[in-house]
Image 1: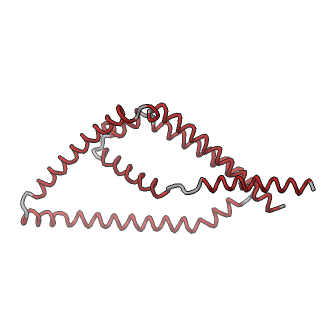
Image 2: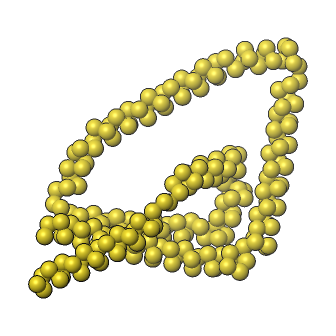
Length: 217
């Protein structure tokens, strides 16, 4: 009777944890992916002159200690993954090795596809460089001065963009990132988020462990 009551309590606790985990689902992966691509492109455009020290983005990241906290986040994630790997190996010996063996052919296939794509882009670049003088000459013949004026326009657009980016950063720093959006408060929020993520990872592991134990019983 006592054993049955204990199993019932364990089942109720497991269901409660499961509901909490399900409520946390729905993370906007696509939005994060798109934002990452946009930010990476903007950083590349801002540092394309080859001098990262003059980059507005690099200066702002250094000022707000973004790199420092990104390293801290990576260390937390690394420690969490190592801890999870050890616990999984304790509960299911050999499982990770089987997964590695199973996924190895697919990893090789992915690498080969990347190589094929890289070679295709390289050949496309070589073809473009080869045909560029011919195209350039044709444009100058039929539309003289177009290339030079386009280069000047692109330079002016870039200079204007840099000017407005600098003004935008100054506005955000002095008018927006104050109070709860200040760097100090954001640092506190980031640390709390890291701790919460680590706690949820442990909670998820215990839920999986209890689920497995319940199934075995």
